[in-house]
Length: 209
Image (cartoon, helix red, strand yellow):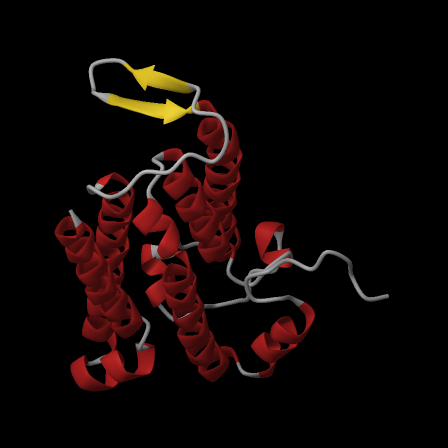
C-alpha cells in the first residue's frame, strides 16, 4: 500500500530538484550560453511543473488509509467504486477553488503585466509584478498550490497525502526562496523593497499603518 505513495514522493522530490535547477538563471546561462541557458530553464521548468502535478495527484489517489473528518455520510461517484464523505466535499471544494483561483489569477496577472507566463518566467524579468494577488503575497502561485494540496488530500481522504503537507509546503518555500535569490541578483533593490512590503507566502491579516 505504501509503495505507490513512496514512488510519488520520490518522483515529486526529483521534480522539485529539477524545478530548483530551472531557476538557476545565471548558472544555466554561464554553462550553456544566454539563449540556450534560457531555453533549458524553460524546458526544465515546464517538465518539472507538469510532473509535480502528476505526482501531486498520486498523493491523493494512491492506495493509503482513508479517514473521515465528521459524519460518515458520503456521496458515491458514478462509474467508479469511490465515495466522498460529504464533510470532506464541503471542506475541500473551497480550499481547492480558492487555491486554483489564486494560482490562475497570478499567472494571468504576470502575463498581463510582464508579457510572459509561468514557462517564460525563466527569462530575465523586465519588471516586478505587484498587482492582483502579488500585492498580497510575493508567491501567490505557491500559496494556491498549498491550499489546493490540502483540499485535495481532504477531498480524497488521503491520510498520507495530508501527512506529507509540511514537506510539500517546505518544498514550495525553498523554491520561493531560490527564485527570490535570483530575482535579487537581477532586479536588486527594487525587489528588496518589494520583499519588505509584501509577505512571501502567508497573507497579513492586518496591515501596519
